[in-house]
Image 1 (cartoon, rainbow, N blue to C red):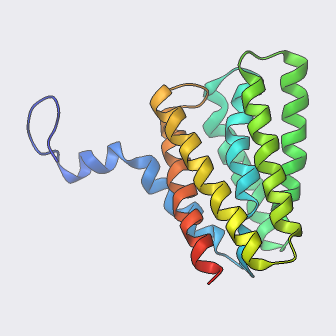
Image 2: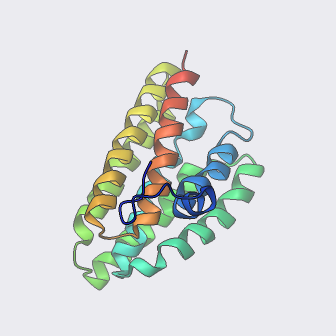
Amino acid sequence: MTSTTTGETPSLPRWLAHRWPTLAAIPIIAASFYNLADVRGLAFLLVLSPLGYLVPASLNRRSVTWPAVLIGSVVVAPLKILDLNIAYAMLVASVVFVVLGIVRRAPGFGIQAAAAVLFAVVAVVALEAGSIVLAGVLIAVGLLAHAAWDVYYHRADRVVPRSYAEWCAVVDVVLGVAAVILIF
């Protein structure tokens, strides 16, 4: 890999500093496997990932993305440790931010709200599916679709910081592939 400005190979510390969102995804990926009974335990990510876009869109402030992620992590950790269903808790948060976005009439909010609803529906169907295979397929497809969403917003550099879009894409891809593996 060469640097685009100097033609030099970047040093490892410089490369790592540039890829911090990818590295920051590793703890979230690892924590997602904590106390995981089956693939349905990953369904919460289909609500959480879009919530990362919904919050800044409803407030019309990209700068709240990472603070919202930190607050969400603090909220999610105890729920996971207590073995409570995180997906349904995240649905409540999503409803709050959908209402807030509607009240504030935030520009560009509609597409984020529609996506949050669509991914939430997939999460609920996966959670309620009688078949573990169907649940796993829905979760995998949902996460990989959200990864595509992340790539689009990373390239467009809109709604959320590029660092969040990169971080979220890594989480979505790795756990989407993991969902496929877990159903076999």
